[in-house]
Length: 508
Image (tube, rainbow, N blue to C red; front, side, top):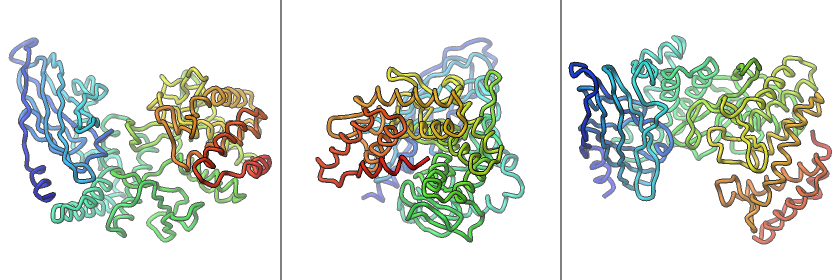
């Protein structure tokens, strides 16, 4: 039955209708309108899809398809089709949009797939819609082969050929078996290439981005050269024999030598994630394994971007893969704050001024407003350091407090009054927000959720104990004890708060 459903999905054509065009300007002028479904949002919930717009089929992401050729005007259209999710369940896809083509030339309308109960909706992404060469960068229409050759370099050709062979192999397996794990492997392998291509065509790809995508491709290729099925979310791969966690895939004799972790996300493959790398460095420092932490900081600097905002020099760790509903690249307050603190500690231990400079540039990023590409949002609780800057409505509790840890470390090393102010103001925001993050029987992971996993609930308790130890404010201890009680109420072993207090008094 499922085989028949999948076969039907792959061949079904539900013709969308062009609703009409109001002529504008000279009737002798002609326009070409392309539609593109971007790899973003709910596209990661879909295994395969087939959408028809004006008789043209779209079944790949990030690939413009010609849907209209004719006179200028207000172009309206509907798109309809089918999708199969990762559980093999079929859903409808539908949506409509319009685009004013006021003069001759090429136009692009970019569509994002969003999830609605029972179906998927096509929604216009206005930030990537408009006239090519004006509202949309001209490079968006360049051939993939030409762009890849320019950005990844001749020395990467052998890796690209390996990636292509792996993609072909898993696509063949999918077509023969209709086993969705094979199409997921294909998507994992193709993702870093698609992401690199799109950011390059939009003029957003930097040196650090190129290096990140090269590493991501190598990591994902290695995995699928040795494993026949995708991993679990958050599975980590490292090209060394060192990891602070059990369960990490360690590859000391791999194609590269690196202490940086690569984290697996379904449909995106293995990604170099600065948040995870800094988390590892932090764990090493807390365990007294300074050399391992310093090695991560040394390597990670290669992926740092230095920028200027209104004369202020600052630095950030861009993230080059989609997380939730982000565009790329994006920045995380977690990485910015913790990074500032860890590089300051590295300076304190080594005397190397390069570490101090990096720490200062990361601290400066707290001055950049959200509208300028920053990550600090001002809420009714006070300033909040966003873990996911692309979603300012999502206030993540643990990410904000971990940024505070970094600010505290920086202040203790340097005595910088700005760092102290950022820390105190951010801690006050947590204090103000604690009643909201308390559901009455558990803690919230973020402002948009009503709960959190047990892992994050326990982490919240530990972070509140840390805030109590570093600020002396008993509000944090009171909530830590209250939330610890929620564990007892569920029959779970509570945290040893007395021991945590003693440990944190002797930690950085």
